[in-house]
Each structure stands twice: as structure tokens, then as C-alpha cells.
Length: 294
Image (cartoon, rainbow, N blue to C red):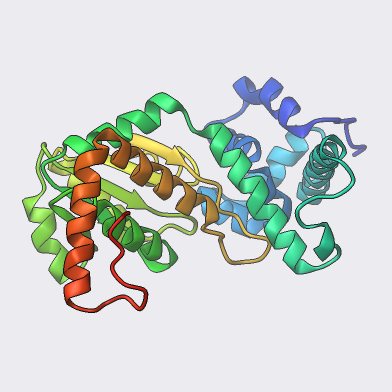
């Protein structure tokens, strides 16, 4: 088969979207939302992420008029290279990572910079404001994450707990079961999860949904297992240059939520922040003195 002349794979995917099967639409959405992942993931890794057969991915590539999955990947890579080149031309000959040229360090940092830009562009002001309002007005705030995403949940629980009361970090374990039983319609659950997606996080989200708790998901796509179940989805690109995800964009979203929460009632937030800092000072926790928000 001779490959179709495709200058822009994502535009071609959009043009054929209505004629695709449901499984193929999920592949198409991933190409549009996370082209870097598709560009470097094996066919099996992409199929596992989307819960489709590897043969479905290959047939999708043929449906676009390409010579299989490798041809699709090469075209996406070229598209990404062109986008990077355009950004470089616009900003001049040097970039923040030019001094690291030809190294994996440059590749990693460039990927994170690109992910931050894509994540920022994908976030909508109204949705962020809705999430912050929910976190501010909730009777209790529950936060969950697992495996590598646990560090995001842990950070958020500490930061949100410095700005408001009744914040709890929970997991799908014996201790978390008590918290899950206490969730109700006046509460909020904030969940972090990225591929290959923790079943424990999914269990916590499903339990919260059953108890009519408002749920917020920070995940890589609205079509992810958690993204399909939560009330509010905040997308953060997470694919790394190797097998390990990058959490830079997820942390940026966490920071945006925390700062938005502080701005809702800055005086009250700073007062609580100082109270937490004073207590920490009593315990002599910090080398440089209390972290009191001043």
C-alpha cells in the first residue's frame, strides 16, 4: 500500500472522525490530545492504555491510508518536529535547553516544557473556577492518588490543608475505607491518576460517585477510566520520553488549584497558613524557621 500524502495527521484524523468506530475514535482522540505519547509508544502500550486490541490500532492506521502503525508514528514525529522548529524560529536561534543539545536531558526538559504549554492550552478558565469553588465550598475535601501520582495527592493535601480545614488524604485501603464511608453530597473528592491508571484510585472514585460526592479528576484525558466517571476533568499531559510518566504538568495543575483556592479568600488563607507555620515552629520542624506564608 502506498502511503497517503498527509501533511498534518491530526487534521486528517479530525476529517475522518465521524466515520470511525468507537474504538477508533478513542485512538483518534489520543492522537489529537497526546501526540507525543503515540509518537513513541509501542502499539501494545497504546492498545493497553485505551483498552483496545493491538490489531484495532493497526487497522486504524490503514484506514488513514498509511502503511501501518510505524508509518503513523513517523508522521506524528515529523509533525511534532515541525512544531518545535516553528517555535524555535519564532523565539530565535537559542532555546532554554540549547546548551544541552543532543542529550537526553534536553529531550526530557523539552518534553516537559511542551507538556506544560499543551496542558495550559487545554485548561478552561470556567472549569478551573468550578473546581476551585467546589474545593472551597465543600464540607470536607478528600484527596487521593496512588503509585507515582500519590506524591501529587500528598502535596495537594498538605497545601490545601494549609488554606482550609477538614482536608484528608485517602486511599483504597483499610484506613481509607473509614473515610469513604463518611463521604457525602456536601463533600469533594480530588483524584490524580495517569497511565496505566491505578485501580485503587478508580475504586475510590467509584465509591465517591455512589455516595453522590462531587468528584474532580486530574488525569491525562477525559476518556481515561477516571475521566469518564468524575464530575470535573482537568487534563494534564503526562507521557515521558521513556517508560516513566512525567508529573510536571500534573503538579502545575495542582499548583493552579491551590493558588486559586488561596485567592478565593486570601486573608483567611494566609491567617490559617501562619497558624500552621506557628505550630510547626513550636515543634522546630524547619531549618530556616517557620513557613508562615509571609
